Length: 460
Image (cartoon, rainbow, N blue to C red; front, side, top):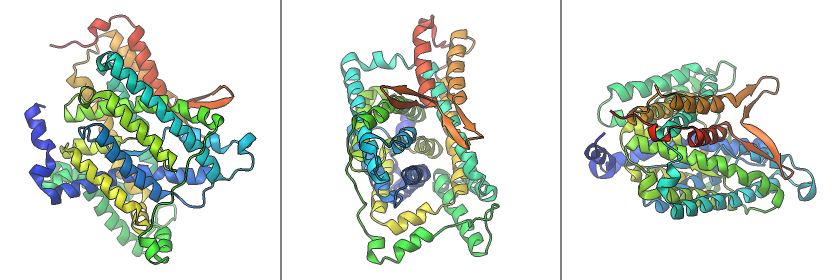
């Protein structure tokens, strides 16, 4: 794609006008919502919390995104949502029952876990300084397309099981959401073509609403929609419609720091993979402008600020990258609109819970497109850079990345849980490296040690 074409569709606010751009912002918000609020639900179960911290999560999703855009000169159209990479660490802290953790409630243990992530943000700062003084080109030279392409593919493939799992709760609704998105994107005109995700969510939700009030249920007998939490907040009067998020301060202990901080290795690699994906989507090298050091700084500090006040750690969201690909609108201001919507929702618990009532099946149907699109972007990255797969070196690197990333993430049938990566002891603390982190490390190392670096890509 030529630079002239890119600039012509990137400036959505100027070309489409404010009303249509605001709708695009809604689409980005719906794309991130399902995964972002899933993290506080998991923490609710892990720590036995009294309440799901959805408001705090939405507040920091908005704040983190705006802060990231400020750090990156508003040049990276990325949305920062809740990170799943630290969930293994959270579970480890929740299981601690000795020393300072003896007799602590779930809320207090969560505070110590958040303190560990605050310290993890320092690793981002250290790497940002290395990039600044060593040079971006030297650092990025360890991440050629033969490495980043398979990693991007892996990001989408690793998320695929969650799409199927969600869709399986009601395949009919999932299929309707998927069909609406495909029809709108392929045969739609104008705004219909660039709002397929929003239309898919709204259209299938309306059908779910009709089915719910007609007495239909999911195949397993559960209600299609659940308005219990929204009703509880509505019964509280004004405080249920307008209230401040319930913040809490992080606490610090060396044991929780040793558990949580090393996970930053995985999230840093995840960030680099997502930035590669966005770069491939918009046709611009975001590692050079605004610079990898700014992206590291924005993501690291955002996570530290969020966790210091009781919010979840953050990461750039592949779902929103897929929306960029579908809509062909790359204006970063549209993503900032989505951040502002998240902020507004964080002060209105009733509406937040109503949006949270979107059935998992609809999220699954939407994710079929979003997660698949991430992998497709990785394939396109390889094609556009003309990575030569007749070269055995390239085949070996890609093979190692894909098998490591998929092989170290599997479902334990007996334990009824997903095993993601490997867990080992370091200085008496358990540390988990996710399958994606392992695959990224394997790819970087293989690219560095295998001979033939000068012939990585064959261009005609």
